[in-house]
Each structure stands twice: as structure tokens, then as C-alpha cells.
Image 1 (cartoon, rainbow, N blue to C red):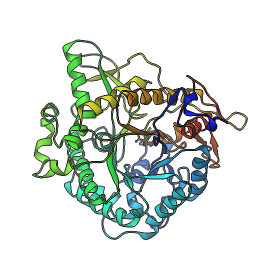
Image 2: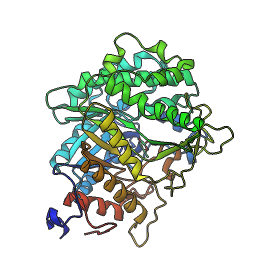
Image 3: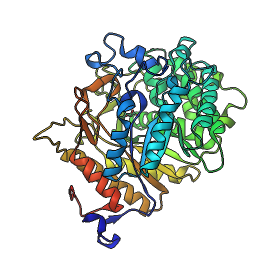
Image 4: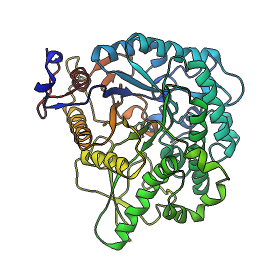
Length: 476
Ligand code: FCB
């Protein structure tokens, strides 16, 4: 039995206590969209807009986690994972985005967390993974300051309702996506295309993060945001390319890192965003809230961006099945080009060294805070063959990225855990059900779960606390 192996036999042993987790998000997995008093979210509305989501798919049923969570948690336990990062649907807890709590909605998360705790799996709850209550969007959404205040109220309700069971909190997931794909490119809900509004949204998402952090704080809690960070390279040494890399690094990474970890926005990004009025939206005291101390930083890592600022360069980064290029503020005159690496089923380049680079950079340049990879994974075109799903490409992806994590830890980076995205196949936003990121395959018609080879591989790594010889794939 591999679980009996001593640490010495492992090629790469991770530190004791390393968190081996899996992640999902409410709208992507829960379904039950009209049950137990759940309100409508911007993703319910957006997914019903013709042409917004591939195949007209919605999260109405998703993978029915709302009803099948016991089976899902039992499978997590059997595989051997030690933590589950899920998100709480704001419209379940507070259907209108303000006002009283909807107890039946909170009860779902009580049942889920109790079930996890009984199984010995640590609950990691994300408060905002993009399902904003529609009434708040109708009132202007994240571009309005009030949204941040409403988010802080919601955080207090969640702390009151679940704080006896949950200690690990992620405030906001990927504010870059929520702001710029939601309000600038229009690829994500609410599908607006207003660059100035997207910049205000980014500020208010960060403000909401800071306020929620204060609302959640109790002795023994661990709180932080999850940012989608990228390794960024200039396509050449040309001045225009180096400046393009500065801009994109500024928008993707430093805007969020400097705000949350230094309590200020980077000067060059402020200047890039002057046409969109970032400075005008900042009120006295905001940056102190945004820079409120955090206990952990969640890093979602998927790929590297290689960029050029030279005119006429072809290429784009894939953010939706529909968009050719996405006009994010600050990214004008920048093109995303290939770095020549193999890609996943999303067309995203596979670059595990980029993960090492990102965590090493954050550890070196920002005040010391424990880091967690809160998402990492890949979509591939999985097929069921003889009742099983063999996914060697995903195993190789996970293996490479975990090795990169190990190398970072060995060089002193305080990386404390890794969550695979995703526990199971689910609703992949604009792609609907066309992209499979799961360790566990889901038959979307029958809801049958089939652990892929990668699920067993990852669970065994978790049980051992490390990786075997390079490329070793053992199901047992
Ligand atoms: C991230 C999202 C997550 C999932 C992965 C593939 O940007 O946080 O919900 O869709 O991408």
C-alpha cells in the first residue's frame, strides 16, 4: 500500500500539514436554483441571454451538488483530500442582497460543513465567487460603492450563521474576472461593456474584501482573498513589449496585490487607469480598509501571458468562446501572443514554472503572508471508456504544478496548500458544460460521478503527503 510508505521513500515529500484540497464554486455545481428561497443572481440572468453561454447552458441544475453533496463529500474522503474549498451563494443566504437572512439557504451550508467536518475534511468557504444577487446589479452592481457595504453585511450574516463551523474564509474570488470580464469585456455576468464602470467595480470589490475581512474576523479565523495571478513575459526585448508586460502585470497582478498587501495602488497602474477615473472613486479611508491585514493569500494560477505592444501583432488571450479580443482597461495596444508551449483544452499554455515564479515573487515582494494555491487545474476532452476515465494529460499537469510548488517551498516560499480545480466537472461559465476541469467526471444527463485517473492520483498524493518518482501514475 502506497499510504504505508515512509516519507524517505517519496521522491518529493511535502511539509507535514500541507493542505491537499479540491475546489468548486456555488453557481458552477449547486443547481437547485429556485429552491429553499434562493434569490436570482447575475449568472441566472446572464446565462439566459441568447448567445451569452455556449449551447445556452445554465447553472439551473449544474451537477446537483445541492442534493448530492453527501455523495460528493464521501468521495472526497475516500480519495483522501484534506480540505474542500466551496463558495457560498449570496442569493441563497440573502436573496435580495440586503435585508434578513434566508435561514433555509444558510442551512444548506450548515449541512454541507457538518458533513465535511464529520468526514475530517476542512471547510474553506469563499464568500463571493461571482453570483451577485440580481437586485444589487439592478441598483448598479459593483461599480456602485453601496455594493461593497452590502457585501460586508452579508459577510456578517454568514459569520453569524456559520462561524461556529468554518474558520477558513476566502472573501472574494478573482476580482479581476468579476470586474473586467463582468463589466468591461462583457464575457461574464452581468455582461456590461463599460470600461470606466469596470475600474470602479475593481475598487469596490477590493473595498468589499477589506470590509468583509473585518466583519469575518474572530479569534482563530484565517481570512484572505483569492486572486488570479499570472506569470507575464514580454514577447521580446523591444521597449514596446517590455511596457506591454509592465501594463499587463500591473492590471492582472500588482493592482490587486499592492492594494490588499500594501494598502495602495501602484503608481504606474493609477496612471494607466487615469482615463477611467480610478483615482476619483477612492474615498478617504478606503485604502486602509482594502489593506487591512490578511492571514492568507489565495493564488489561482492557470497560465502565463506573453505580450507585445508592437502594432499589428496577432494574438489574443482566450476569455470566452465568443470574444476575439477583450478590451480591458489598461490593456489597450497590447496583444497576447503564443509562448510556444502546449495548451490545455481551454487553449491556455501549460507553464508550471510560471506558478513557481508567481509564488516566489509574491513571497519576495510582499509582506510575508502564508500562501495557498486556491485553484490550479486544466480542462481536457475527457471520454468515458469502459466505465472509467483515463486522463493522463491532467495527471501530468497536476504533477508538474505540484513539483513547481515543492520547488518553491524548498526555496523558502511559505506555500501551505494546494487546491485542485475542480473536484468535479461543472458549469464552466461562458463555455457552459463544454469544458471539463474535474478530477471526477460527471455525466451531465444522469449526474453519475466517475473518478478519473487524476482523482485517484491526487488523492494518493494527498494520502502520502507527496509525490512518487517522476511521472509515476499509480491508482492504488
Ligand atoms: C477560474 C474560476 C473558476 C474556474 C476556473 C477554470 O477563473 O475562478 O471558477 O472557472 O477559472
